[in-house]
Image 1 (cartoon, rainbow, N blue to C red):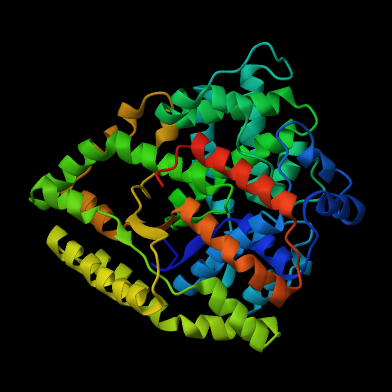
Image 2: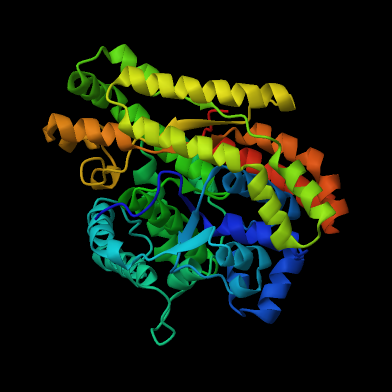
Length: 460
């Protein structure tokens, strides 16, 4: 399938967008938010938060998501979400509706990707282990059930179709925790074989099917669905705060598992020394102007949200243009040395921004090691990382070189640094938005998120 996206587009996790919009509109947090949703939108919503692994949204987490969303709006031309995922309050979320009206936010039609993703899930699920102590489904029945759920989800909303809790959780953006005591007990294996361990955990949650487990399983399944759509569509994924550590763990694991083998193939294809391949893959520190501060200043000056968004986008128009130009240059570079020079050019630009705003580094750019699901697909061998890239070795030299050049950059956050900086903006957010930050909810989020980062062994 041809790539219909421009080099500077991203696929956004709907949770990041919706929680940011809820903060701007002063939605309640924690248990009060749960009660609101039960009372107004969905009597089944309480299942999301039941059990020992519940994690209700807080205003601190929403501000965290808003800070990253604003960076995305500053840096990227268009932002896409999955058409098949529609939260119950989607039409009431002003930020979401404004971005759609302005053409900044668009929806990806997911139906064309069903055949490839169905095939991947059928293979992947057949290679996982099912805890036979739980007998809601047979092994084959459970694999078919989950593949059918993914099919139904990607087909889009159909109110006439019978629904189950996993499908409801996917469609309505129900989000719970992506950590669990069992995952913590498997921490070493989670690092070595993340696709195998997380897949087994997802199977167990869906198979167990107690109140809340289905939605927790849906949260893990959503990670896999977003990731595979991103790979098949060839568009970088811009995930929410809860999903970032999990997806970064995927990316780091793939790179560690296949880099040496792939880099050798790339060096041979370009007829260059392998040291140049490693230099080409080096991270580029990214220094953006303080987007939260700029946005709140603009919104305070003009409380009209559409105007504030226009002014904010105008403020960063030059940066977006430079970033898109960089992506085009990288795709056209004929040699590895040319690619390295382009990245050095970007580094000079961001260093000047750093000096002007006196910034500390809290994010960077790295090139996606993917977008070729037909030859680099960990789901085909989730328990054996050495088999992830074997098909790549059979491809012609020009195909390999073209793939290497057209890979996109992805924005990676130093989450602990970003989270620390967010605390400095809570008072400003309260003044501009009129929202309050509950101290206990704040502390609970920081504690839970720190444990969460440790579970997925974030680099920062």
